[in-house]
Amino acid sequence: MNCFERELRKIVGYCEYIRNPKYVGRSCIDRLDDGIVVKMEFESTMIRDKYNALRITLMNRSEGKIDTQLIRFNELWGVKHISGNDIEPHIWKYNEDVNWYCYIPTSTEMSELSQSVDEYLSCFTEPEMEETEEIGMSM
Image (cartoon, rainbow, N blue to C red; front, side, top):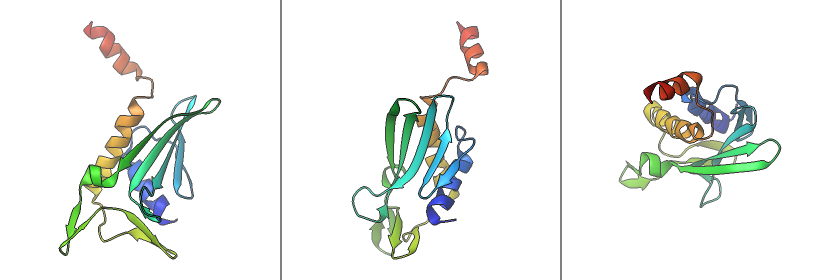
């Protein structure tokens, strides 16, 4: 298991909407419902091999990409102050070594990231039967 898969498993572990993930390289893929597939992958937004964001892509199996969302770690967790330096959380690939650079997110921070993923995915799923009944009952 590589670093990307290990960290994706941590994120998915807290996600409500990811139920049967498949891991391929730097990506996690799952079927959200009958027509929508979700793909999550770490992305390097500015500097090569500095993975500072999580990209979520939603695809329709027959029509292609529906939407995409980028969650930058520094926007979610902030800049970390380590040994007098400001460090933006990121996974760094150096030669064959891949790991978090200077700062490892806490389980609480990984849970926050998972909640952001769930918030986004909830916009593209059908409401559960119980939620539908509650909405109908309150009218």
